[in-house]
Length: 250
Image (cartoon, rainbow, N blue to C red; front, side):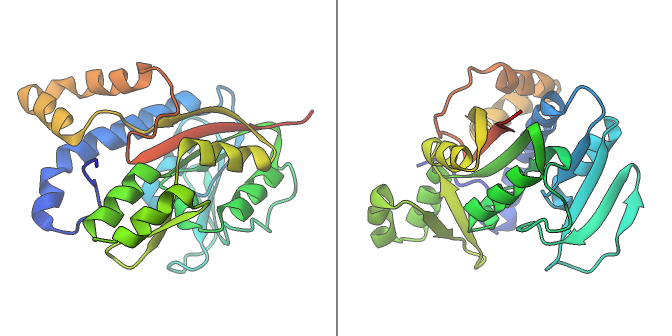
């Protein structure tokens, strides 16, 4: 089983993983930079404010609609530094018409936290223009298996190979939907999206990252470049899967 990054709430564990999370978010930022449209576009971000994707897309010159969870803290609709912030239900996107955005960002495990993922992906496909693209991240089933084992949920572990949907309880009481790459590909395809690629967010372990950066803190950019140039594959070796898909149709 892999190290369960982020499953614990022990302060000592958090401190020991601080270097890895610095690397992780640097990789996520670089992946988003590579993925964003080259020309100014209308971008919908449903990742939530913790992901910082809306700010990054707006800084790149895009018109951004940032959805704030209707069940979260109340915040008014507002325009903030090139992005329009809207309090709405990300699962339905009723405030948007069909084919009204060029790109959708669903980072920060958003689709794993929305357990009826098929419905949410269907709404995302609906609001995308033909040829519009989706970038998303989800919890991998490798992470889910590790969390179940850590909590001694052996009965649930034995059911995983035959399960079409795997819901994993976290220590904080939340539930996450976890995916193998093939399951994620099937979900996106059934929503009318053409999968461009699926990959692990990172393939380097926390211990490897910590070892390299402890020896040379300036090596962060080289580690990030290693991830960006790694051969794309469907192997679910990391804690999170990242995927890019395009809406089909003329």
